[in-house]
Length: 136
Image 1 (cartoon, rainbow, N blue to C red):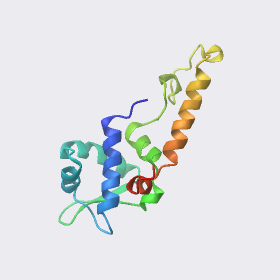
Image 2 (cartoon, helix red, strand yellow):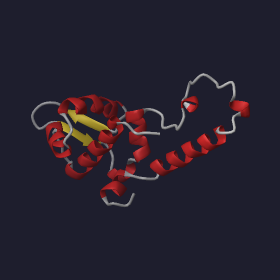
Image 3 (cartoon, rainbow, N blue to C red):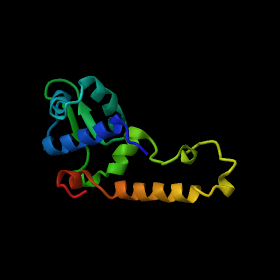
Image 4 (tube, one colour):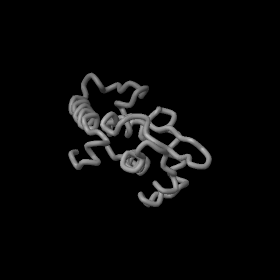
Protein backbone atom coordinates (compact mmCIF):
# COMPACT_ATOMS: atom_id res chain seq x y z
CA UNK A 1 0.00 0.00 0.00
CA UNK A 2 1.32 3.40 -0.91
CA UNK A 3 -0.14 6.66 0.36
CA UNK A 4 -0.32 9.22 -2.43
CA UNK A 5 0.75 12.84 -2.32
CA UNK A 6 -2.90 13.75 -1.74
CA UNK A 7 -3.00 11.67 1.44
CA UNK A 8 0.33 12.97 2.71
CA UNK A 9 -0.68 16.57 2.05
CA UNK A 10 -4.06 16.10 3.72
CA UNK A 11 -2.24 14.95 6.85
CA UNK A 12 0.08 17.97 6.71
CA UNK A 13 -2.88 20.35 6.28
CA UNK A 14 -4.69 18.88 9.27
CA UNK A 15 -1.58 19.13 11.46
CA UNK A 16 -0.93 22.69 10.31
CA UNK A 17 -4.51 23.74 11.09
CA UNK A 18 -4.23 22.12 14.51
CA UNK A 19 -0.97 23.92 15.26
CA UNK A 20 -1.89 27.35 13.91
CA UNK A 21 -5.67 27.53 14.11
CA UNK A 22 -6.37 28.32 17.72
CA UNK A 23 -9.96 29.54 17.76
CA UNK A 24 -9.75 31.26 14.39
CA UNK A 25 -9.50 30.48 10.71
CA UNK A 26 -6.23 29.91 8.89
CA UNK A 27 -5.76 31.25 5.37
CA UNK A 28 -4.84 28.51 2.93
CA UNK A 29 -2.14 30.76 1.52
CA UNK A 30 -0.40 30.58 4.90
CA UNK A 31 -0.72 26.79 5.07
CA UNK A 32 0.58 26.51 1.50
CA UNK A 33 3.62 28.62 2.35
CA UNK A 34 4.43 26.82 5.60
CA UNK A 35 3.93 23.36 4.11
CA UNK A 36 5.46 24.19 0.72
CA UNK A 37 2.39 22.89 -1.08
CA UNK A 38 0.94 24.70 -4.08
CA UNK A 39 -2.29 26.56 -3.39
CA UNK A 40 -3.83 24.88 -6.45
CA UNK A 41 -3.13 21.45 -4.96
CA UNK A 42 -4.64 22.46 -1.62
CA UNK A 43 -7.75 23.60 -3.48
CA UNK A 44 -8.16 19.99 -4.64
CA UNK A 45 -7.72 18.49 -1.16
CA UNK A 46 -9.83 20.83 0.96
CA UNK A 47 -13.25 20.17 -0.60
CA UNK A 48 -13.08 16.52 0.48
CA UNK A 49 -12.06 17.49 4.01
CA UNK A 50 -14.92 20.01 4.16
CA UNK A 51 -17.45 17.58 2.66
CA UNK A 52 -16.63 15.00 5.33
CA UNK A 53 -16.85 17.60 8.11
CA UNK A 54 -13.21 17.42 9.13
CA UNK A 55 -12.69 21.13 8.51
CA UNK A 56 -14.91 24.12 7.87
CA UNK A 57 -14.17 27.09 5.70
CA UNK A 58 -15.22 30.71 5.47
CA UNK A 59 -14.64 32.87 2.41
CA UNK A 60 -13.73 36.54 2.45
CA UNK A 61 -11.72 38.79 4.74
CA UNK A 62 -10.61 36.94 7.85
CA UNK A 63 -11.68 33.68 6.29
CA UNK A 64 -9.86 30.45 5.85
CA UNK A 65 -10.20 26.99 7.31
CA UNK A 66 -10.29 25.49 10.77
CA UNK A 67 -10.73 22.12 12.38
CA UNK A 68 -14.21 21.15 13.49
CA UNK A 69 -12.93 19.05 16.41
CA UNK A 70 -9.97 18.86 18.77
CA UNK A 71 -6.73 17.40 17.32
CA UNK A 72 -7.00 14.35 19.59
CA UNK A 73 -10.36 13.51 17.99
CA UNK A 74 -8.96 13.02 14.48
CA UNK A 75 -7.17 9.82 13.50
CA UNK A 76 -4.70 9.39 10.71
CA UNK A 77 -6.90 6.59 9.37
CA UNK A 78 -9.93 8.86 9.14
CA UNK A 79 -8.00 11.58 7.30
CA UNK A 80 -6.31 9.16 4.92
CA UNK A 81 -9.59 7.44 4.07
CA UNK A 82 -11.07 10.82 3.13
CA UNK A 83 -8.07 11.69 0.97
CA UNK A 84 -7.29 8.24 -0.45
CA UNK A 85 -10.51 6.29 -0.29
CA UNK A 86 -10.14 2.78 1.05
CA UNK A 87 -6.90 1.71 2.68
CA UNK A 88 -6.56 -1.85 1.45
CA UNK A 89 -3.36 -3.67 0.50
CA UNK A 90 -4.69 -5.37 -2.66
CA UNK A 91 -7.30 -4.42 -5.27
CA UNK A 92 -9.46 -7.50 -4.72
CA UNK A 93 -10.30 -6.19 -1.23
CA UNK A 94 -11.74 -2.91 -2.46
CA UNK A 95 -15.37 -2.35 -1.57
CA UNK A 96 -17.42 -3.17 -4.63
CA UNK A 97 -14.59 -5.03 -6.35
CA UNK A 98 -15.51 -7.90 -8.62
CA UNK A 99 -15.56 -11.01 -6.43
CA UNK A 100 -12.40 -13.01 -6.99
CA UNK A 101 -13.06 -16.43 -8.46
CA UNK A 102 -10.06 -17.75 -6.58
CA UNK A 103 -10.96 -16.35 -3.14
CA UNK A 104 -11.98 -19.74 -1.74
CA UNK A 105 -8.59 -21.27 -2.56
CA UNK A 106 -6.44 -18.14 -2.34
CA UNK A 107 -3.62 -18.85 0.06
CA UNK A 108 -2.60 -15.20 0.27
CA UNK A 109 -6.01 -13.66 1.04
CA UNK A 110 -5.73 -14.27 4.82
CA UNK A 111 -2.37 -12.48 4.83
CA UNK A 112 -3.75 -9.49 2.90
CA UNK A 113 -6.79 -9.35 5.16
CA UNK A 114 -4.65 -9.35 8.30
CA UNK A 115 -2.28 -6.75 6.83
CA UNK A 116 -5.25 -4.49 6.06
CA UNK A 117 -6.51 -4.91 9.61
CA UNK A 118 -3.10 -4.23 11.16
CA UNK A 119 -2.54 -1.11 9.05
CA UNK A 120 -6.08 0.16 9.65
CA UNK A 121 -5.88 -0.44 13.39
CA UNK A 122 -2.53 1.35 13.59
CA UNK A 123 -3.69 4.37 11.59
CA UNK A 124 -6.93 4.53 13.57
CA UNK A 125 -4.87 4.61 16.77
CA UNK A 126 -2.75 7.61 15.77
CA UNK A 127 -4.30 11.03 16.28
CA UNK A 128 -3.34 14.44 14.95
CA UNK A 129 -2.42 15.35 18.53
CA UNK A 130 -0.08 12.33 18.66
CA UNK A 131 1.65 13.49 15.50
CA UNK A 132 2.04 17.02 16.83
CA UNK A 133 3.51 15.67 20.07
CA UNK A 134 5.80 13.16 18.34
CA UNK A 135 4.01 10.13 19.83
CA UNK A 136 3.16 8.18 16.67
